[in-house]
Length: 120
Ligand SMILES: [Zn+2]
Image (cartoon, rainbow, N blue to C red; front, side, top):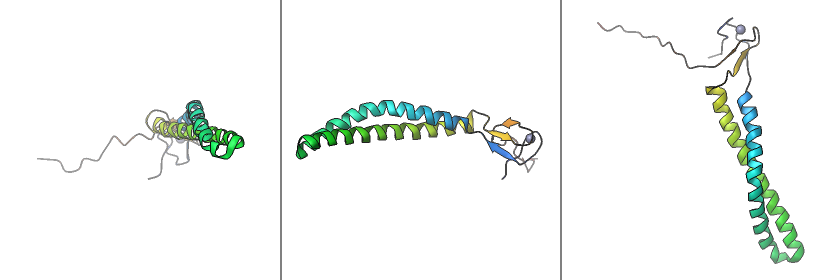
């Protein structure tokens, strides 16, 4: 069912996705912060694994572990942020905008359901 502007009934509707964009960035930032602790853990394990390869192996192992830890933290945070943002977009924010009259509205679930069959 195509969206329709509640004001002018145009079907040229755009979506803002403000929540998804904002929460995605915030989530990536938060994830990167938590990724720092994951990175130090990764560096520790990487260093331990690298012991097999001698001093160079320890350095390479630490760097690799830190990078992996940071990436995992950032990615997890960003996807959590995007998931939260899409909920915000759909439930809270006026996510849709009419491209003709610039009216912003939510895609609210239809409140009026046709009640057919009158008892009695
Ligand atoms: Zn409109």
